[in-house]
Amino acid sequence: MTLLRTFLLMALTATARPAFAEACSAKPLLAMTYNIRLDTPADGENSWVHRRHLFIGQIATLRPGLLGLQEVLVGQKRDLEQALPDYSFVGGGRDDGKDAGEFSPLAIDRTIFRIGASGMFWLSPTPDRPSMGWDAAYRRVATWAHLTRRSDGARLLVVNSHWDNQGLGARRQGGALILDWIRHHRLAGERLVVVGDFNADNDEESVAQLLRGAQGEALLRDSRLIAEQPVFGPAFSFNAFDAFPAKGQLIDHIFVGPGITVRTQGVIAQHENGRLASDHFPVVAVIALEGSRSGKARPCR
Image (tube, rainbow, N blue to C red; front, side, top):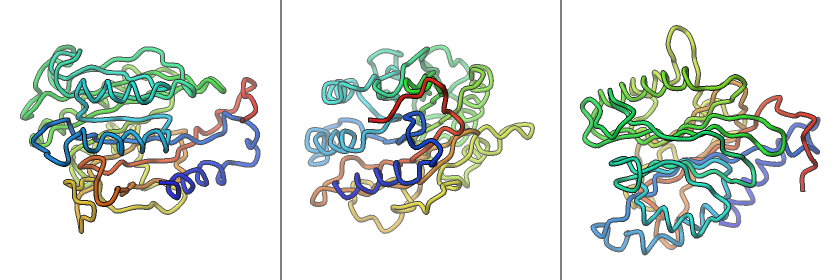
């Protein structure tokens, strides 16, 4: 874990642009998406009680500024809130918008960001209420937050989602719904970050449309494809609790809009004597907000 943190700290500092070297507004951010794997006794020795310390330790050590989580049950959310007091958790359970069912929450480091408006919507024809969408096997949601960085006032719109694992139509329609929602709710001057477990790789149309956009308007880019430094880690994110999987799919993604530079990106395949924190590896990206320095910037400490 120490070596991993050292590598990411080097990426966060060594690539900073010289002209911005003394402004905290220039410091890159660590964005992360992480499917936590719900708490179920059916997982036996891989159940949450046996891996909770490892999962929380990863988050506390890497300290992402922006974190999208998936498959979080209310008990797991309480564990995270207690262990990570500097984070605010946004979003409710998919079954009632409150505490029932899986959450796809955003965890935001309050020492870096102020949270403005936030909320969630369902990936369905009736996004304003708990509902199943198209051919989905489960209710699916997207969680969002408008953020302002404390150091310089830079603004972000962040969206996190967990797409259906069975319904191809639900993934495609859900992706189109998220793009439409962004077009109508993104505020002037906001940069854009979209993260999640999309249950699909980039070759599937549901994900490809996010990058293609509509009518020639490409809102998002794949952080893995535009990273300035070589990406690291395996080329897949689902591990099925196998610490050394030979192959797999990259189904967890970090997408960014214009005005964001991706310094490096990767998949963290960390384990503890063969034990994994989840059945997914976390995906991370070191990002920088272009041209965000302002007179409000203060010296880094």
